[in-house]
Length: 342
Image 1 (cartoon, rainbow, N blue to C red):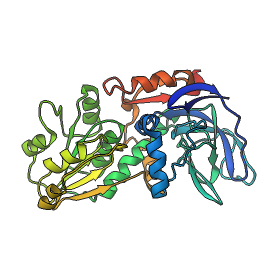
Image 2 (image 1 turned 60 degrees about the vertical axis):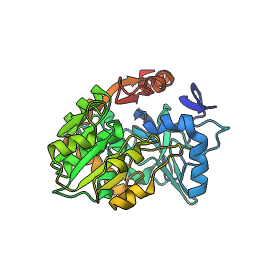
Image 3 (image 1 turned 135 degrees about the vertical axis):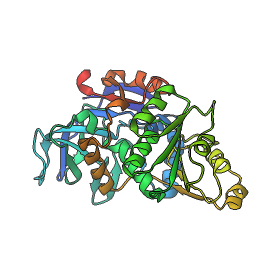
Image 4 (image 1 turned 135 degrees about the horizontal axis):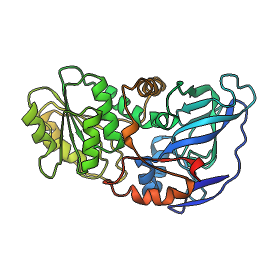
């Protein structure tokens, strides 16, 4: 089958072996799979990702000398259930947390040498954790359950509550997911900052009350202008060196900083800044199964409108160019890989 493969820090299109479902697994055909910012980072910094995974016990264990089919934001159609599978049947459209469960533990789909991710025509899923896509929901929209769940989890972990205000630094897919979750949480002052006019427009559509270009007005200044009094939670959703330091320096005393942007490079902060202000800093990763399921419900009900986030579609052959295109944040929010497009 055809797949877009990470090979020697490049994305190449080639044939890979057909997966065969084992007990408790299901063979599916990929309908749509989003290209994630984490995949862009991983292509450049895969060695650091593996190094830190080994040091911390994270599930991103890959042999970089072997092929890896990435893609972990997907919807799929069931083809062949493996032995013992009774909860799904051929033709069902499903989404799933991107992990394969086994007696040895779990493996992250999209960061594995064993299990191909959604940049392939077909893949294997763990049947027990597949969720049916609600009737009437576009499977392309359902594919965004995974990235939007990251925002739901980040907002939950931040402890933000009614009466607080939020500043979102960065309006890429993760920042936009945070904004959508903040809106659902009923936060009344949501300020967002991003260089891209397209992403600023999406931030407004998803629920931000004030959106600024930080070259013209820093996000913290915009918060001071429109609010300035409520307890503030800052969401760092950029993930490049210097952003955490910037958030700490901008934060008012006793603010909370939630780090959801994935920075894969060494960064530096001045601890005395956080000490003097008594800042709280929280790092987050992923989501819980309950949050994933709840996010699918939000998308199905229209509480999170993901349609505007889809700014491009490519077939498997178009994945390498899509990776190059996404290196510039101005043109796209989310490009979907749809194998049926060729």
